Image 1: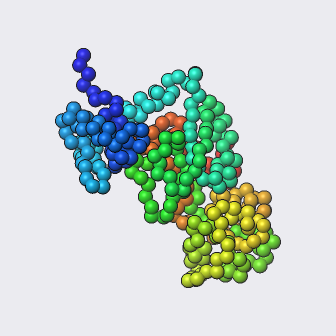
Image 2: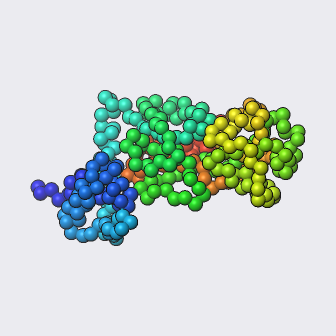
Image 3: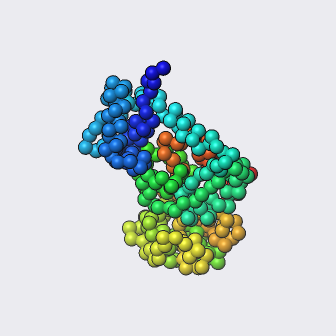
Length: 300
């Protein structure tokens, strides 16, 4: 029988170029040259007899025919990739490589992770280094828990992102300071500590509390360790509520004004669209969202 289907390299080149909008980014993902990706797509278009991708100065975009063709081949390629990973589970332990912010990792994820491992005892988790401006083109990571850069920033076209937790911020102080904090304005009499990447968090929260201030007397900025600075009595801060659950419960930190404000950012579970429906990724995504909804103690 004459084989009608294109080669896998041609299909993968087309799919990754379509998802990333770029021959160059597709080449990075596939560990080949940009020219190799371009030639593979040209061979595929010649084989199927239609133009699948429009080329322009900004990259590539799907034609109507390309969009329909991608819908057909994407599930099949995902099944083939899953088969390559799972066919020999007896001799090869399934592995999921994760990149997550250290603060979220230590304060929120790791205390809950034994629950996930109990549900999936054969799955091996590997935590990779975290980069705040990751381009999601790394070949050593399968999924990311990534902080959104801003409330309006968009994820790359080849990434599927699901919100998990971390939008809400709340003011915190040392428990010994609570008696002196009755109103939002009382916070301004204390040293204002802040997250160095997001110095506007204080203004955002105060605006929600009814206080407008053009120039806030921010005192000390921290890239990490903001909660620890508050526990040391250095001042007050606004932080993500999900990162201080256990400190609030143990009364090492107090939340004197229980008003939360959404920053519109938070942490998202990100995966390449080509692998977003892998069974292990689907399971982790579902579990993370359930844990976020369950509150401070999670669910067993």
